[in-house]
Length: 151
Image (cartoon, rainbow, N blue to C red; front, top):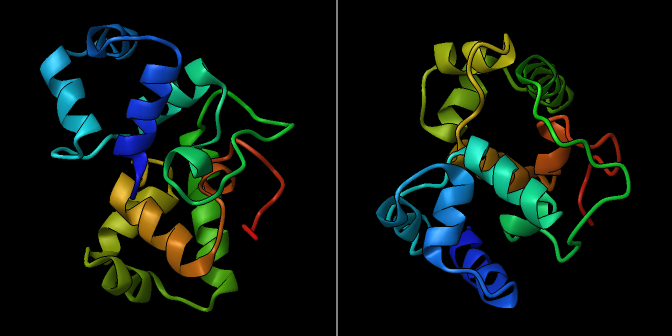
């Protein structure tokens, strides 16, 4: 994932400090600093907030595409829709919950909770799926309907 450098580039471009971004995310500067250096993993909820603030796609922030934005971007992530799309993706690729769990090095129950919309998929799992299967993170999280797959 390349979000650390992209965060830093955005911050410089808009002449913001780490304190400014931390205030947008309602977190401490130290916590934000650890996201920018990628010492800590940036959670999906903060990714969404950053993308909304800077009007960029999640795919761009995660370094999956050079497309900064999509025409029909929704601002909110719906856990239920994200779960449905994860399940749809899994079935299209003929994967069981256990298969996907093994790919992500997690438990099948974690995948089941994601698919039911009880938990939002974690950033590393989302990135792994998107990178391996060339699918859009924005699509999987329900922020866009097209494109489903990245070029």
